[in-house]
Image 1 (spheres, rainbow, N blue to C red):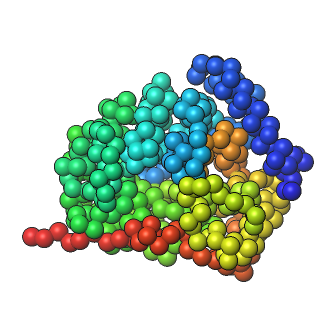
Image 2 (image 1 turned 180 degrees about the vertical axis):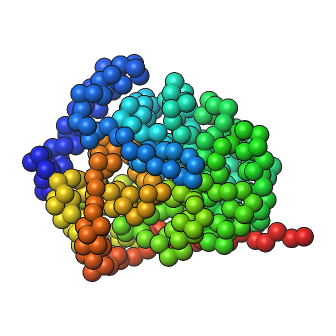
Length: 384
């Protein structure tokens, strides 16, 4: 079992964090009281680090909220607990909260709207449109839909769910192969002019689509899967972001919890857990990938931190305009992730770390083929 610098094992740390979380959840403390109690925790549990996505300032570690309704990992989180988790994340310095209309659908945005409305001006509301979802009922109508009229309906409904008059950052969730990106970017430009959206982003776009979108309306951030295991963005998307001054947000920065070291060869995923379909975790691939997790554990031990923290710190060290949004529904995990803000890797350490990673290949694809086919899509050219 990995030991922290204080001699505290990950299991003991998470048990202690669970007690902190249980106290917060059962005492019924008001938001302001929880904020006052945050001072009793270690400085590593409060994050002061800030980064810029274009001109948008956010915490260096955000909170991914996809599973607040338990649809991704087949969990069953309680709504009051998710409200407390979001509020406590803010108390610990998190300002970037990431959701999508597809999460729930719609319900995750409602949870965050309720949780964060008391501190609306202190946080960054980030969400996504683009699936063919009825924005009023949440009914999935199948496929993608980024037609301008649908985008407008989605944003209007989004504002109501988040209890706000403007969204700080809104991404196209996936590129719609039937709608020219110029129409999407143009619609977002209009919404920005109207003050309903402040910043525009793209998630998993094709490289030329990213350039074309940016030419119509400057893109603040790209959100792609990026982690020690999923390094696809390094080939084309990250260089474009650097060239054009676009920020980059990493979804699944802990490789669906694999890089936390809590999954081993015998781990069985619950029925309905998305990871059961991911090639990384197939029996023929998992053993080889656990060798890479061993590299992460080695560096965590060397730095006196957790595997999750070293994995997030590695991403942050790649560029000052990269921000991570690890997702969790557990308060102790959130506190662990926030602690990554205090971890520093020198240039020499990054070089040595990367050398070890280069000798430990990843086995299997990062997503099932049907899902993977939605990444890197190029939008059609606008006619006329």
